[in-house]
View 1 (cartoon, rainbow, N blue to C red):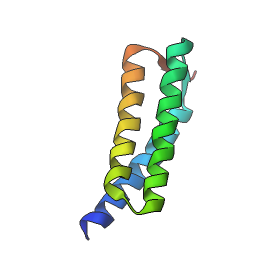
View 2 (tube, rainbow, N blue to C red):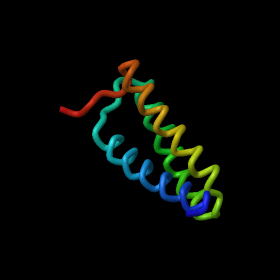
View 3 (cartoon, rainbow, N blue to C red):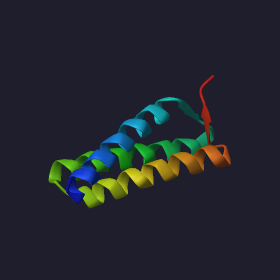
View 4 (spheres, rainbow, N blue to C red):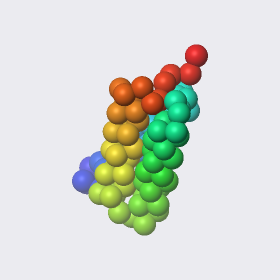
Length: 82
């Protein structure tokens, strides 16, 4: 498997996981909303870069989306839905 194929596979896997995780959280306050906006923008960027065939940037974008999600959860501006 080529590096490009590996990046595409990993990017797709983490994009799917990130979309599910985002659907399972609520924002807390204005800062939480800002986090969700940024996460969704990075997910959108991921798809844009996939469409352009730029797998390095696609992977980077989904890593950023996941990081924002984890940080938001850790600091309490994103919380799991009940």
